[in-house]
Image (cartoon, rainbow, N blue to C red):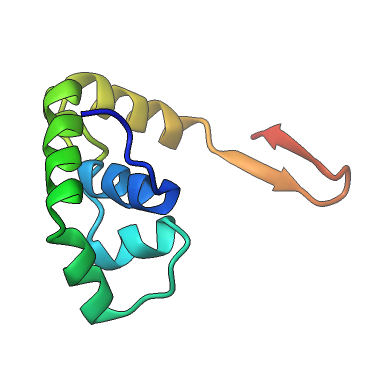
Length: 94
């Protein structure tokens, strides 16, 4: 299955495949949060098929995964946090 024709639906499906909740996926796709809409959209045949396809392609690796590479990247990110320096108006490593 190719990308969904509706751009927001595609963003919603990608967010669900990444492991976000339905509400967070709605907001990530640019919709206003609404319990009924998020459930209706998540149960759409096209969305369900696209999420399954994205998960197969990714091999089950998502942000909430416990994959060793992911854990290593998280550890590096904690060791070298990116902090905004307001005095120079640029990003700096501390």
